[in-house]
Length: 137
Image (cartoon, rainbow, N blue to C red):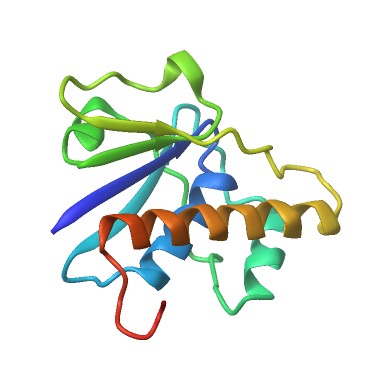
């Protein structure tokens, strides 16, 4: 089983959405996602909770966690979203960067747009790697 690590600064928005979408779309026998941040916030942003709840995904019990080299070393792929140089470099780890806007404090309409862009990117990743769960095509 492969682990994909989604990382952003506060682990309270983009990376949480990406990990939730990934785990909803991917075959859990093939791949799973975790998320972390370089400077974890105290909780997932309320606007992100609301936007994901609209899609039937409850992030209310999720707590941001720190991105460590140990966590990164367990991943097959690291997808960064705005943490730049603060994200750890792990030799041999595949890495991709998704330039996504931080949803913190944005109007709900913009948060929905970011959520939908994250979903599209995750769907493309899952399909490209052959990790899709049955019935999620």
